[in-house]
Image (cartoon, rainbow, N blue to C red; front, side):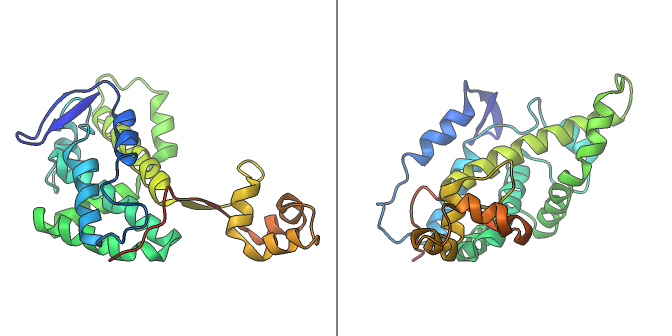
Length: 233
């Protein structure tokens, strides 16, 4: 894997960038009960997720330049667009994060062309819709095909988006629709306080009983906790 040299915008090897990200979460520069200025958190996220992390192309920027000529394909540009995309998704789960997203967007627009940034975000938001096509292409021999560069770019962007989404989920928590496959008792009760109260009063033996009885039809949510409580100054 690679790490960006923030002075030269080049990439140098690191052993385990995921471990490095986790260690950053364990060393937040604010006390647990301290209000955090949204602008400061936005800059901290930018430093951790953009300036100090890996080259998403894995082998350079040429594949992005070839496939997406309308966008400035520097490492930091793509990573900034990915962070913005992931943060925008988090706001849909938790509107309380809006001050942070607004601050990060302003920070991003200071360093990059706004129109090109928006164009990159549009490409990134299309990634889930391209998954089926990428799976089909994987089964083909693309050795001499121009589609290879596009497939490699898709894989690199998708992997980096997943890493950043996982980082933000751990940091700010996650809310998802409950299914039979992902059901978690504590997360279900946290997302459904009325159900938790009914369980406490003996109306249901568990959150699972409620989920199987009606929650699955109602598309009830799971709430996985954030690593701390955030209060924006």
